[in-house]
Image (tube, rainbow, N blue to C red):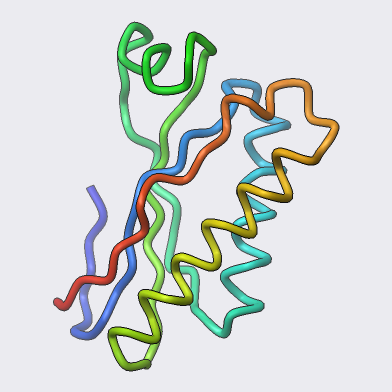
Length: 116
């Protein structure tokens, strides 16, 4: 479980990644790139346990692993939400156009802003 020691506005969501660690790392690098390009701060990725039948249904039959992402920014909540949506869209577009063998196992769940 992620531990947040400071107060503020955070973004969080689930990232579905290929089971193959090399491709999973590449996918996280793409997300991280867009997080930084939008002026946001990546706090961490946290791997989540998931049973194979559940993960296969989520990504249409492929094996996957799931991580929770935590992002921080000092912005108005509405602007932050828009930037989170843009990060998701850009990352999914880039991975879907990539030559990764297991790109269909990648998706970003809804990234939402939360106050702590």
